[in-house]
Image (cartoon, rainbow, N blue to C red):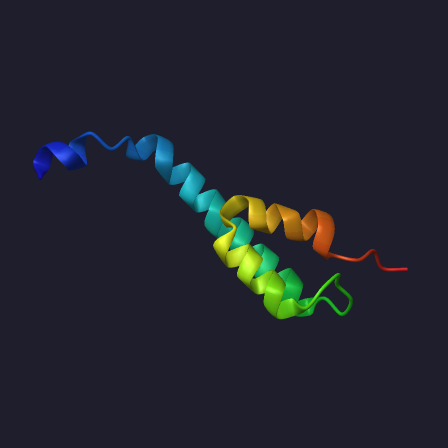
Length: 68
């Protein structure tokens, strides 16, 4: 067990995990506050939570409608 834990490069993985969590939280807060989006909100929640980093980025690029 000790050799398994010591072989994981946490210094490389942790920034990616933190970035993923920040993007998911910001994406969900933005989705909650948005009045007009492309598609149903429940679907974007699933995409943001299950799509990891790409799900949040997809919401910001595709899901949000421009305020006019």
